[in-house]
Length: 340
Ligand code: KG4
Ligand code: ZN
Image (cartoon, rainbow, N blue to C red; front, side, top):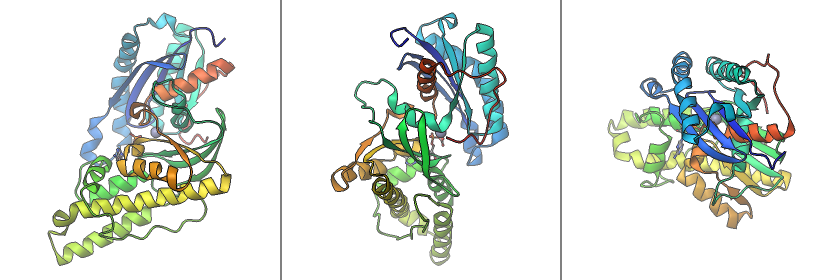
C-alpha cells in the first residue's frame, strides 16, 4: 500500500488556531494556519470567541490548503481531524466539518489525538530534520501542554510525567502579564532574557515528586516578589525587566532539564524529541543542546511550523493510521479530555 500515492487532508481546531494541511504520503504539500488575533486583547484564549472564529475560518482555510497543494478534493484518500484533547466548542467545529466532508466525498475519516500528533510531527518527511529512533522520550511543551511521553512505537505511547496545574507556556504568559507584557509573553521574555542576568533574582523551583511538573507556585512566587519590590521602588519592573525575564526563564529551564535528567535516568532512554510552542525558546534549545555533551542525550526539534499547533502533524498521524486501515466510525464525537 505504501508504494501508492496517498493524499490526506488534515484539520486541526483544538484551541485557537484553525489549521488545514494536505500531505502526500509523509510529505507536507500545504500547511495553512489562521491564528486568532482576537484573544490578544483578553490576555488568553476565550473559548466562546475561539469557536466562532473557527466557524468563520474553517472553509477558507481548507480551501486554501487544497489550492496551495495544487490538488482537487476528489483526489483525497482520507480526512484526518483532531478529536481531542482541547476546547469542546473548538473541537466540534473541526470534527463536524471533517465528518461532513468525508461523508460527502465518500472517503475514510481518521480521528487523531492532538498530543500524539505533537510527538509524531517528528515523522514528517522534511529535508534537514532527522527522525528519532524508537524508543524515545517526547516532551510536549506549549501554552496548553506539558508532558513527557515514553514512545515505544508510533501508536504505543505512555505519559510518564505531566503538569499538575499550569502548562509551561502559561508560566511564561502569566509571568509576562504580571510584568505588563503583551500576550503571549513567551517570545518577549525569551528576547529579553538574552539581555539580562539569569541569576539576578533567584526563584525557588517547585518540589514535585517524580516526573510531574507544577508551575502555578512559581507564578505566585513571582507575583509576590514583584509586588514587594514595586512597593519599595515603583520603577522596579522597568529598571530590571531584562534581569527579571532572564531569571524567570532560567528557573523554568531548570525545572524542565531536571525532569528530563530524571526521565532519562529512570527509563534508560537517551533520545529526546521536543515539540510545542515553547520549544521555540532559545534558552531551552541551548540547554537541550548542552545536555548532549553533559548528559549524553540526543535531542530532536521539528521544523517550527510543525511544532506549534498545526494540521500537518494531524496529517502525518492520519497517514500512518491510513496505512494501518485504522479508520473512525461515522458516529465518532469530539472528546475534550482525550488521553494518549
Ligand atoms: O504550541 P503553541 O503555539 O500553542 C499552544 O499553546 O498549544 O504554544 C504557544 C505557547 C505560548 O504560551 C507562548 O508564550 C509560548 O508557546 N512561546 C514561547 C516562545 N514562543 C512561543 N515561550 C517561550 N519562548 C518562546 N520563544
Ligand atoms: Zn498543541
